[in-house]
Image (cartoon, rainbow, N blue to C red; front, side):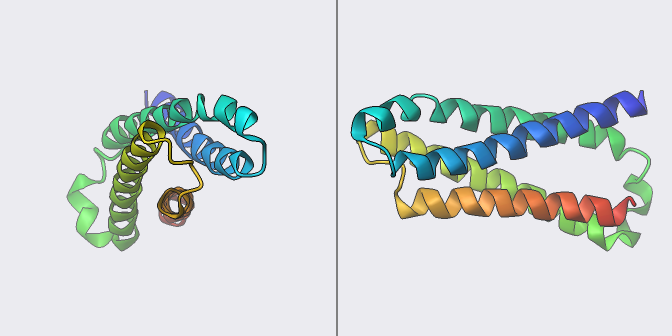
Amino acid sequence: MKSFMLVLHFFGLVLSLGSMVTFLLMRRSCSKVSSSEAEFLLMSVKKFLRLSHIGLGIMFLTGGYLMTQYWKVLGTMPLLHIKFTVFLLWYITLIALTVFTRRAMKSQIRLWDPRIGFLSLMSVIFGVIDVSMAVLQFQ
């Protein structure tokens, strides 16, 4: 069962981090194309954010199961505390990014709003830090 959960956990990671990188690249490409092509690209932006939410949800559920053997010794694992904190920051950043993107799409503000760019970049950075903390802890 543990190996199946590890596969699901990795799938959630790939789904979440991959869709955030795709969102970041799509956001940049929207600013470089004509307005009609940008409108077509904007239709699929919400799907990538939704995929990222689903991936983080899968990671949260499977990570909780995979951590059952470590709960008693959690105080001796400082990298795991950092990983949990970065995961929460990653999720909070994703929620804020979703809120700003919905507001931008409703009010016809384009996705190259600096707040959306900053949040999407921070979300990718938090994802990479989260992966590196997990690798350092469980190598």
